[in-house]
Image 1 (cartoon, rainbow, N blue to C red):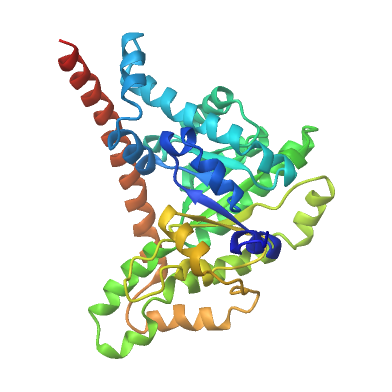
Image 2: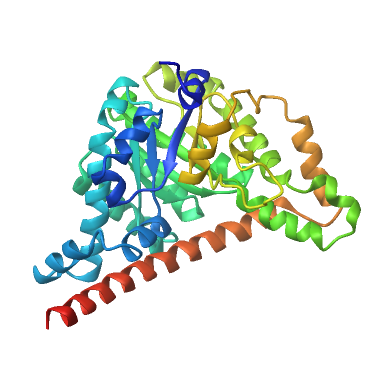
Length: 370
């Protein structure tokens, strides 16, 4: 049977992960089918779990059982999400083994309310790491100032980290350096660095959404810059990735078994209806990276995606776009800083909404039983 576009992309050097998880896709065999089509990993976040648990009856029976066991709302949430991650990781275990640990991962987010607390983030990630107990699990830590220290410490403990909510070049650089410091410490403590994997999750489409709205407030001649900021920003980040992980500092760590921290493109669904539905797939094809896609983007990519390298070490066009934005008082650094702050708040709200939904399901179940 001819290989589809997802397999072709993997052969090129970029992995496709799914930015979604729910009980139905695990139990129905859908996840196994998607893996058969070339899917190589999964990511989750509080918004994804909020939708999965609150919008379906798939978890209702287990929620009531856990409540009757005396579990708190947080403990119920914790058990539900950990079980999904464990089951998905078990299904992806073959991918993990076949790719020698490159792929086959499932990511679970550390409580977003701890994004600005280094100590508690570390403690919570270690707890989740122990509870999930899967070699092919990653734990998501926001790339905040406090998060950088947590990324280093967790990496130094041999824990797979998915550094998330990265928007700016500066954030990415700090994330990569945190990983480098952590893996260096792990090696110094006689750890097997080849077993540790990490990704740096760069959020893409949200940048165009904000920048385009700012440009719409300007005169019409800025139209040539619209829908270009996000990919240009990603191009600069990819070049930094190439520079950091080809430099002498990392080569020494690589000789000790260390793996490069791959860039993962997240938030890759197309928001602008005038653009291709796989814009943030085709324009971000680059060796040594991951693209985590929502299901509709995954399906569109399988339907009409084509493999052609889009990002390289040449960033002149990207620099022109970012510089051009300054002519209209659009500072990509300010945009990215606001997106980071808004992203942390959005995940906190989704987390709170999820806990509220669990409480509602418990109350409703009690009413039905009476």
